[in-house]
Length: 374
Image 1: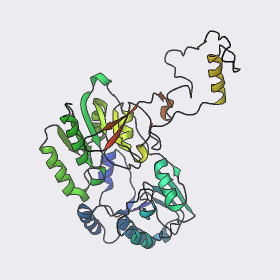
Image 2: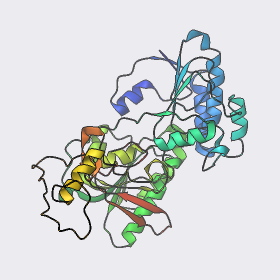
Image 3: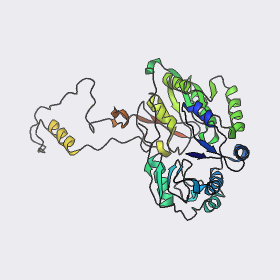
Image 4: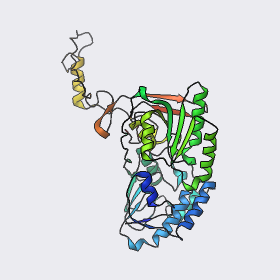
């Protein structure tokens, strides 16, 4: 296995950050790290330019394609000349055909250079996406719906009870413009202006490409004693914050999956996210089966499953108590959690903020539709 990448990040750094032990050959084309430094410098001024990076990566990979039997892309969609598995976090080409177009001026040019300007992907490409919402965007652009493969969400150990937690907000994510940590600071400022004494922890990795943005973020935090920025915090530190604070905040609109939101829910926090993207709506209660509907009817009509005339006398209602510690039967109330097969009560409210952004609050442990985070 060979990793072909234009990123400057080393495997040692990534293994330390994520607690992994990956060990594969790394191939950095176009002179190695020099091109990576150039792209990172451009990203700090003009944004990540993912489409342009992918076009360069595609050209470099095609020169090496004879060495490989199959390709796996974790950098979204490509028109690769060999069988491939492509994990699409969000489409990077043909953005003007997306349901909420944000293409930019030259995305069409990059799409043609990448060989997907006709909105057709290779038939031997197996498509995967991180959420049903992202899969819908891919289908709208390319006419093919990927299978949904949710990113893994680890349980948060040693989570405290609600009364033992701090009245604080935790923001977890890359310290980059698309995650909008500066907006998270403004949101917490607005909450404090309304009389709520809460503090904020901004925790995440600081990519080299956004050094200027990180400096602005740290300057904003320095003026606010209630804001703490923690760069490249260890996994143990992140879990500690999630287990000891009440609120989790995500500020990115149209979040493709929302790993941070998933971890907030897993930690028993009250999670806030923009009312868009994969975390837009709470997961709906599954429809009861025919057997469950008949059981309900027998309970409602005193053991007789047949429909009764409205004027007929009703007998005593018989309810089968649920033994202590057991969950109610599927479909009888609550939200089914795929992970660990737990049921949760939906508890969703909206929080209109001063800056006009409406966030949706997911009650502790409430599932979200489309993101696969339960």
